[in-house]
Length: 247
Ligand SMILES: NC(=O)c1ccc[n+]([C@@H]2O[C@H](COP(=O)([O-])OP(=O)(O)OC[C@H]3O[C@@H](n4cnc5c(N)ncnc54)[C@H](O)[C@@H]3O)[C@@H](O)[C@H]2O)c1
Image 1 (tube, protein in one colour):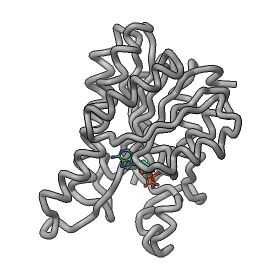
Image 2 (image 1 turned 45 degrees about the vertical axis):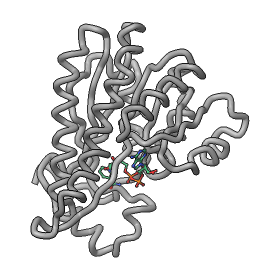
Image 3 (image 1 turned 90 degrees about the vertical axis):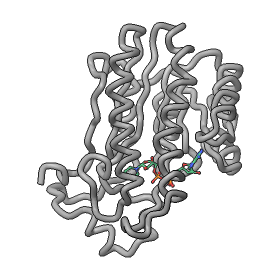
Image 4 (image 1 turned 135 degrees about the vertical axis):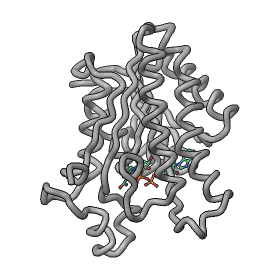
Protein backbone atom coordinates (compact mmCIF):
# COMPACT_ATOMS: atom_id res chain seq x y z
CA UNK A 1 0.00 0.00 0.00
CA UNK A 2 1.29 3.42 -1.01
CA UNK A 3 0.09 5.52 1.95
CA UNK A 4 0.33 3.11 4.89
CA UNK A 5 -0.61 4.97 8.09
CA UNK A 6 -0.03 8.44 6.64
CA UNK A 7 -2.39 11.00 8.15
CA UNK A 8 -4.03 12.81 5.26
CA UNK A 9 -6.38 15.78 5.41
CA UNK A 10 -8.69 16.19 2.42
CA UNK A 11 -10.78 19.36 2.34
CA UNK A 12 -14.07 19.31 0.48
CA UNK A 13 -14.31 15.54 0.90
CA UNK A 14 -18.07 15.38 1.46
CA UNK A 15 -18.57 14.50 -2.19
CA UNK A 16 -17.07 14.61 -5.67
CA UNK A 17 -13.32 14.45 -6.19
CA UNK A 18 -12.57 14.89 -2.49
CA UNK A 19 -14.66 11.87 -1.57
CA UNK A 20 -13.06 9.79 -4.35
CA UNK A 21 -9.63 10.74 -3.00
CA UNK A 22 -10.67 9.89 0.57
CA UNK A 23 -11.85 6.43 -0.50
CA UNK A 24 -8.71 5.78 -2.53
CA UNK A 25 -6.41 7.02 0.25
CA UNK A 26 -8.15 4.68 2.70
CA UNK A 27 -7.64 1.76 0.34
CA UNK A 28 -3.95 2.72 0.20
CA UNK A 29 -3.68 2.44 3.98
CA UNK A 30 -3.95 6.11 4.96
CA UNK A 31 -5.76 7.57 7.94
CA UNK A 32 -8.02 10.25 6.55
CA UNK A 33 -9.42 13.45 8.01
CA UNK A 34 -12.52 14.24 5.98
CA UNK A 35 -13.28 17.94 6.04
CA UNK A 36 -16.26 19.73 4.59
CA UNK A 37 -18.54 22.65 5.38
CA UNK A 38 -21.47 20.28 4.99
CA UNK A 39 -22.54 18.26 8.06
CA UNK A 40 -23.08 15.25 5.75
CA UNK A 41 -19.35 14.61 5.94
CA UNK A 42 -19.90 12.76 9.26
CA UNK A 43 -22.31 10.33 7.62
CA UNK A 44 -19.94 9.92 4.65
CA UNK A 45 -17.11 9.03 7.03
CA UNK A 46 -19.27 6.40 8.73
CA UNK A 47 -20.13 4.87 5.36
CA UNK A 48 -16.59 4.63 4.01
CA UNK A 49 -15.10 3.62 7.39
CA UNK A 50 -17.86 1.94 9.43
CA UNK A 51 -15.49 1.04 12.27
CA UNK A 52 -14.43 4.70 12.54
CA UNK A 53 -10.82 3.67 13.16
CA UNK A 54 -9.13 5.26 10.17
CA UNK A 55 -11.21 8.37 9.57
CA UNK A 56 -12.07 11.54 11.45
CA UNK A 57 -14.55 14.08 10.17
CA UNK A 58 -14.56 17.83 10.74
CA UNK A 59 -17.14 20.36 9.67
CA UNK A 60 -15.47 23.70 9.00
CA UNK A 61 -15.52 26.50 6.46
CA UNK A 62 -12.13 26.84 4.76
CA UNK A 63 -12.72 30.60 4.31
CA UNK A 64 -12.69 31.25 8.05
CA UNK A 65 -9.23 31.40 9.67
CA UNK A 66 -10.54 30.52 13.14
CA UNK A 67 -12.51 27.52 11.89
CA UNK A 68 -9.48 26.35 9.87
CA UNK A 69 -7.18 26.61 12.86
CA UNK A 70 -9.65 24.78 15.13
CA UNK A 71 -10.20 22.04 12.55
CA UNK A 72 -6.45 21.43 12.23
CA UNK A 73 -6.11 21.36 16.05
CA UNK A 74 -8.89 18.78 16.30
CA UNK A 75 -7.25 16.62 13.62
CA UNK A 76 -3.92 16.85 15.48
CA UNK A 77 -5.79 15.88 18.66
CA UNK A 78 -7.14 12.77 16.95
CA UNK A 79 -4.12 11.62 14.91
CA UNK A 80 -1.15 13.49 16.52
CA UNK A 81 0.43 14.26 13.14
CA UNK A 82 -0.33 15.56 9.64
CA UNK A 83 1.52 13.99 6.74
CA UNK A 84 -0.55 15.22 3.80
CA UNK A 85 -2.92 18.08 3.08
CA UNK A 86 -5.03 17.88 -0.07
CA UNK A 87 -6.58 21.31 -0.52
CA UNK A 88 -9.54 20.32 -2.68
CA UNK A 89 -12.50 22.41 -1.43
CA UNK A 90 -13.68 24.55 -4.30
CA UNK A 91 -16.64 26.15 -5.99
CA UNK A 92 -17.39 27.72 -9.34
CA UNK A 93 -19.87 30.51 -10.04
CA UNK A 94 -19.71 31.23 -13.72
CA UNK A 95 -20.98 34.53 -15.15
CA UNK A 96 -19.87 36.41 -18.25
CA UNK A 97 -17.70 39.40 -17.39
CA UNK A 98 -20.47 41.98 -17.66
CA UNK A 99 -22.61 40.05 -15.16
CA UNK A 100 -19.80 39.19 -12.72
CA UNK A 101 -20.39 41.01 -9.45
CA UNK A 102 -17.84 41.66 -6.73
CA UNK A 103 -19.87 39.38 -4.42
CA UNK A 104 -19.61 36.42 -6.82
CA UNK A 105 -15.94 37.22 -7.47
CA UNK A 106 -15.22 37.24 -3.72
CA UNK A 107 -17.17 34.06 -2.99
CA UNK A 108 -15.04 32.04 -5.42
CA UNK A 109 -11.72 33.71 -4.61
CA UNK A 110 -12.33 33.28 -0.87
CA UNK A 111 -13.11 29.57 -1.20
CA UNK A 112 -10.62 28.49 -3.84
CA UNK A 113 -7.67 30.76 -3.09
CA UNK A 114 -7.92 32.27 0.40
CA UNK A 115 -8.97 28.84 1.72
CA UNK A 116 -5.86 27.26 0.17
CA UNK A 117 -3.67 29.92 1.79
CA UNK A 118 -5.32 29.46 5.20
CA UNK A 119 -5.09 25.66 5.14
CA UNK A 120 -1.45 25.62 3.94
CA UNK A 121 -0.61 28.14 6.68
CA UNK A 122 -2.37 26.06 9.34
CA UNK A 123 -0.68 22.73 8.57
CA UNK A 124 2.84 24.02 7.78
CA UNK A 125 3.99 24.43 11.43
CA UNK A 126 3.13 20.78 12.19
CA UNK A 127 4.84 19.54 9.02
CA UNK A 128 7.90 21.66 9.84
CA UNK A 129 8.04 20.12 13.30
CA UNK A 130 7.90 16.64 11.70
CA UNK A 131 10.51 17.78 9.11
CA UNK A 132 8.29 16.25 6.44
CA UNK A 133 4.94 16.80 4.79
CA UNK A 134 3.19 16.89 1.44
CA UNK A 135 0.72 19.51 0.29
CA UNK A 136 -1.36 18.90 -2.82
CA UNK A 137 -3.49 21.79 -4.05
CA UNK A 138 -6.29 21.09 -6.50
CA UNK A 139 -6.08 23.68 -9.26
CA UNK A 140 -7.88 23.37 -12.61
CA UNK A 141 -7.38 23.45 -16.34
CA UNK A 142 -9.54 26.59 -16.13
CA UNK A 143 -6.71 28.31 -14.28
CA UNK A 144 -4.06 27.18 -16.79
CA UNK A 145 -5.50 28.51 -20.05
CA UNK A 146 -8.95 29.91 -19.26
CA UNK A 147 -11.71 27.66 -20.57
CA UNK A 148 -15.29 27.95 -21.76
CA UNK A 149 -17.66 27.58 -18.82
CA UNK A 150 -15.37 29.08 -16.17
CA UNK A 151 -15.66 32.68 -14.98
CA UNK A 152 -12.84 35.18 -14.41
CA UNK A 153 -13.21 34.50 -10.68
CA UNK A 154 -12.60 30.76 -11.06
CA UNK A 155 -9.76 31.18 -13.58
CA UNK A 156 -8.04 33.72 -11.32
CA UNK A 157 -8.49 31.61 -8.19
CA UNK A 158 -7.04 28.49 -9.79
CA UNK A 159 -4.13 30.36 -11.43
CA UNK A 160 -3.51 31.74 -7.94
CA UNK A 161 -3.43 28.22 -6.53
CA UNK A 162 -0.64 27.39 -9.00
CA UNK A 163 1.24 30.51 -7.83
CA UNK A 164 0.85 29.60 -4.15
CA UNK A 165 2.06 26.08 -4.95
CA UNK A 166 5.26 27.27 -6.63
CA UNK A 167 6.01 29.89 -3.96
CA UNK A 168 5.43 27.52 -1.05
CA UNK A 169 7.49 24.76 -2.69
CA UNK A 170 10.41 27.20 -2.52
CA UNK A 171 9.63 28.56 0.95
CA UNK A 172 8.99 25.20 2.63
CA UNK A 173 11.29 22.83 0.72
CA UNK A 174 14.17 23.18 3.19
CA UNK A 175 11.76 22.05 5.94
CA UNK A 176 11.05 18.79 4.09
CA UNK A 177 7.68 19.96 2.84
CA UNK A 178 6.68 19.19 -0.74
CA UNK A 179 4.05 21.36 -2.41
CA UNK A 180 2.46 20.33 -5.70
CA UNK A 181 -0.81 20.90 -7.52
CA UNK A 182 -3.11 18.86 -9.73
CA UNK A 183 -4.97 20.70 -12.47
CA UNK A 184 -7.81 18.47 -13.69
CA UNK A 185 -9.67 19.09 -16.90
CA UNK A 186 -13.41 18.30 -16.96
CA UNK A 187 -14.15 15.34 -14.68
CA UNK A 188 -17.43 13.46 -14.57
CA UNK A 189 -18.81 14.00 -11.07
CA UNK A 190 -22.28 14.27 -9.56
CA UNK A 191 -22.00 18.03 -10.14
CA UNK A 192 -20.75 17.99 -13.75
CA UNK A 193 -23.26 15.26 -14.70
CA UNK A 194 -25.99 17.86 -14.10
CA UNK A 195 -24.93 19.66 -17.29
CA UNK A 196 -26.29 18.47 -20.66
CA UNK A 197 -23.87 16.04 -22.37
CA UNK A 198 -23.23 18.55 -25.19
CA UNK A 199 -22.04 21.11 -22.63
CA UNK A 200 -19.67 18.59 -21.02
CA UNK A 201 -18.48 17.67 -24.53
CA UNK A 202 -17.79 21.35 -25.31
CA UNK A 203 -15.53 21.58 -22.24
CA UNK A 204 -13.62 18.60 -23.62
CA UNK A 205 -12.96 20.10 -27.05
CA UNK A 206 -9.48 19.14 -28.23
CA UNK A 207 -9.15 16.13 -25.96
CA UNK A 208 -6.96 13.46 -27.56
CA UNK A 209 -7.88 10.58 -25.21
CA UNK A 210 -11.31 9.09 -25.85
CA UNK A 211 -12.31 8.20 -22.31
CA UNK A 212 -13.87 10.79 -20.01
CA UNK A 213 -11.96 12.03 -16.96
CA UNK A 214 -13.17 10.29 -13.80
CA UNK A 215 -12.69 11.08 -10.09
CA UNK A 216 -10.46 7.99 -9.86
CA UNK A 217 -8.03 9.57 -12.34
CA UNK A 218 -7.56 12.51 -9.98
CA UNK A 219 -7.35 10.20 -6.95
CA UNK A 220 -4.59 8.14 -8.60
CA UNK A 221 -2.52 11.28 -9.25
CA UNK A 222 -3.09 12.43 -5.66
CA UNK A 223 -1.87 9.08 -4.30
CA UNK A 224 1.32 9.47 -6.32
CA UNK A 225 1.93 13.01 -5.03
CA UNK A 226 1.14 11.98 -1.44
CA UNK A 227 3.43 8.95 -1.50
CA UNK A 228 7.18 8.46 -1.33
CA UNK A 229 7.14 7.72 -5.06
CA UNK A 230 7.07 11.49 -5.66
CA UNK A 231 10.00 12.35 -3.37
CA UNK A 232 11.81 14.21 -6.15
CA UNK A 233 8.74 16.21 -7.20
CA UNK A 234 7.90 19.64 -5.84
CA UNK A 235 6.53 22.89 -7.22
CA UNK A 236 4.87 21.00 -10.05
CA UNK A 237 1.35 21.33 -11.39
CA UNK A 238 0.28 17.99 -12.80
CA UNK A 239 -2.08 18.57 -15.73
CA UNK A 240 -4.72 15.83 -16.03
CA UNK A 241 -6.86 16.52 -19.07
CA UNK A 242 -6.63 13.75 -21.65
CA UNK A 243 -4.56 15.99 -23.92
CA UNK A 244 -6.78 19.10 -24.02
CA UNK A 245 -3.90 21.36 -22.98
CA UNK A 246 -1.65 20.43 -25.93
CA UNK A 247 -4.13 21.88 -28.43
N1 LIG B 1 -15.22 18.34 -11.29
C1 LIG B 1 -14.41 18.86 -12.21
O1 LIG B 1 -14.59 18.68 -13.42
C2 LIG B 1 -13.21 19.66 -11.78
C3 LIG B 1 -12.26 20.04 -12.74
C4 LIG B 1 -11.16 20.79 -12.34
C5 LIG B 1 -10.99 21.15 -11.02
N2 LIG B 1 -11.93 20.78 -10.10
C6 LIG B 1 -11.71 21.19 -8.72
O2 LIG B 1 -11.73 20.03 -7.91
C7 LIG B 1 -12.23 20.36 -6.62
C8 LIG B 1 -13.42 19.45 -6.28
O3 LIG B 1 -14.40 19.62 -7.28
P1 LIG B 1 -15.73 18.74 -7.30
O4 LIG B 1 -16.17 18.70 -8.70
O5 LIG B 1 -15.51 17.47 -6.56
O6 LIG B 1 -16.72 19.71 -6.49
P2 LIG B 1 -17.99 19.33 -5.57
O7 LIG B 1 -18.86 20.55 -5.58
O8 LIG B 1 -18.58 18.04 -6.00
O9 LIG B 1 -17.36 19.15 -4.12
C9 LIG B 1 -16.74 20.23 -3.46
C10 LIG B 1 -16.84 20.02 -1.97
O10 LIG B 1 -16.22 21.16 -1.34
C11 LIG B 1 -17.03 21.56 -0.25
N3 LIG B 1 -16.84 22.98 0.02
C12 LIG B 1 -17.19 24.03 -0.77
N4 LIG B 1 -16.94 25.19 -0.15
C13 LIG B 1 -16.41 24.88 1.06
C14 LIG B 1 -15.95 25.66 2.15
N5 LIG B 1 -16.03 27.00 2.15
N6 LIG B 1 -15.46 25.02 3.25
C15 LIG B 1 -15.40 23.65 3.28
N7 LIG B 1 -15.85 22.87 2.28
C16 LIG B 1 -16.33 23.48 1.17
C17 LIG B 1 -18.45 21.28 -0.71
O11 LIG B 1 -19.36 21.19 0.40
C18 LIG B 1 -18.27 19.96 -1.46
O12 LIG B 1 -18.46 18.84 -0.61
C19 LIG B 1 -12.59 21.84 -6.66
O13 LIG B 1 -11.51 22.60 -6.16
C20 LIG B 1 -12.76 22.10 -8.14
O14 LIG B 1 -12.55 23.44 -8.48
C21 LIG B 1 -13.02 20.04 -10.44
